[in-house]
Amino acid sequence: MEQDGLAYMAACFAEEFAHMGYSEEALLAVFRDPFYQGPHLAYKLRGEDWVRALIRRVIA
Image (tube, rainbow, N blue to C red):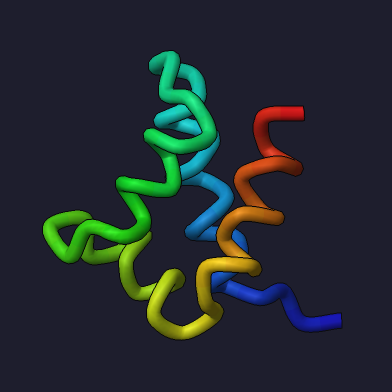
């Protein structure tokens, strides 16, 4: 099965920011912010619900 590169990249960003102590809402703010081009691309392409679910899996 081919790995989903966008999902992998988004999870890496979420993990890095979570390790720095970002809360769920702070992580979501990163994904919403166009300054953070990688996370924001995932947000634009997959939507907020997908990003929220990813963040919850990462911080669980």
